[in-house]
Image (tube, rainbow, N blue to C red; front, top):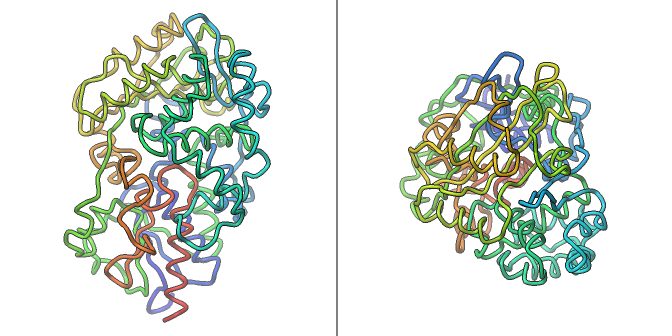
Length: 471
């Protein structure tokens, strides 16, 4: 081992692991330190309920993972990552037993919205189909980091993407299309009337048509394990169970890269109030279920989908998100649910299933949303409660303990609101750099933000190797 490492990475979530892999494959010596006993951060898999039931404590479905330029450049399949595509990417059921769907076919998806909106949906998506690779490169980055690869589609997508979902969805006449669109925008964990929420909805819809919404065989841990295996193959080292409280506890290195919240980075690196203006957002109430059978959805399409959005209308979804952001208790939550064991039998004992659901709640909320979540599930899957063998419940305090980056239970590591929507963690030409020349930030608090796609780690690594090569 060299007397001084080129880079030390703090935090073995997907972004920290991506940054380490990017640096190691360029010949830099790298060591990763993780406070938890296992790697993965938001991409982990654990037996949370009963033996043999393998749950994803945080992320479960990965439309931006399979479409990630950073992951695509690494031999992750050779290191054990295998994507499984559900029959339908998404189902969004309605009280009448029908459902809007997202599939690989734009036409099939459009028809599920009804004849009044099928054409409008096709027209909205048509300009971007076939351009995922360049759009992903151009939008999953810092907006001012050089010229876009495809300026025409970048500008056109940007004009749509900057709009609130509520404005963009005015192109639709019916409740089904508006409900589907609001559900997609809700992944931002912000009211759908907020700036750029239309872009979130568009990106997730386009991802379904271009790459699907897959699950990794064996669970989300497979992504983290593949990245770690690749790092080790390149000569990097990973140390778990090692909490870092001060910079001087780490071995000497030319650069330190933090996959942490900005708050934690400032505390560890002695940067004072460098990020005092950074805002964290609303949280979630998450339940992992062990079930005796598949979820009995009334809508037959939901029984074939990897992801099911529960909360039919745009108005209900907006109300649920606004309640969470303004600090009110959940009453009729909008739920994002995943049922990976329908397509990956390795996740549960034979004939049994794992199921994952969360609704939005205020940051730091200490209540119990189990009853309102299960009441909402029963609306669209009568008899659901009869299938529950066990449940593992995590509200904001538990989420924050499980992952230190989830400040107040904010799984996005930063609010999707106001200027922070496009400028995170603060205005800077290189948002991954800090006031300390050897310290960098690579978490979801940096562009392009949350999701298991490794792009903040990719861009932070680029900033680090530019600095190291210039030194």
